[in-house]
Image 1 (tube, protein in one colour):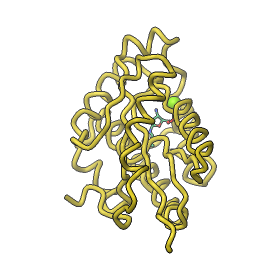
Image 2 (spheres, helix red, strand yellow; image 1 turned 180 degrees about the vertical axis):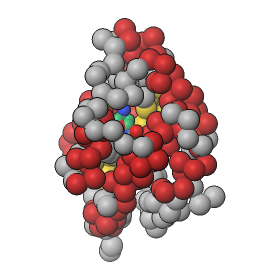
Image 3 (tube, rainbow, N blue to C red; image 1 turned 180 degrees about the horizontal axis):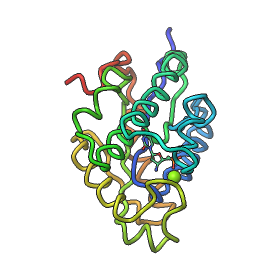
Image 4 (cartoon, rainbow, N blue to C red; image 1 turned 135 degrees about the horizontal axis):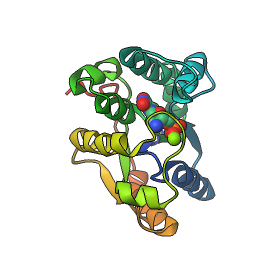
Length: 210
Ligand code: NYM
Ligand code: MG
């Protein structure tokens, strides 16, 4: 008997939607069910590209919009071997942001959606995308945005619209204005059918190949 490959779950949304907290909770629950699971996050600020991205986000470094876009994409590509081997060895991955954030944030600054997609074409396609949706007013009620670049009301409104343009019918949209428990249960429910499937198709490296 061969081990079933891991499930590749992506969690997306605007800033303040509660992604990081919910990702951790999801991972704990999966581990509690004896499902080997790892949490990854993009940008991964620990690598060399990640350190440049971190400087850009903290506004200590200026970069051209195209250049930073490509760095975010490179930051994903450099993780692809690790992700592939984890999944193939049966480990589930919960990934906090992915290429959808990459496109939504850069396109919100005015770059074309189509141009923004290109560097991530051929990246590993997730099995499930959970979109934590939060109205901007609710994000502000929750203490507002932080000090990093992009954490501004005007930009976040456009980012949310860009996510709307990227959204596919397979995405599970979760109302992130609900309580933490309800959001967690909704995420848990949304992954059940894939988690219980006895077989999964082979990994697909066909993101946006259409
Ligand atoms: N972000 C994240 C991008 O602009 N492009 C990307 O490809 C990714 C993965 O980085 N405001 C933005 C979205 C966030 C910021 O993410 C940092 P986080 O999850 O807050 O560390
Ligand atoms: Mg943030």
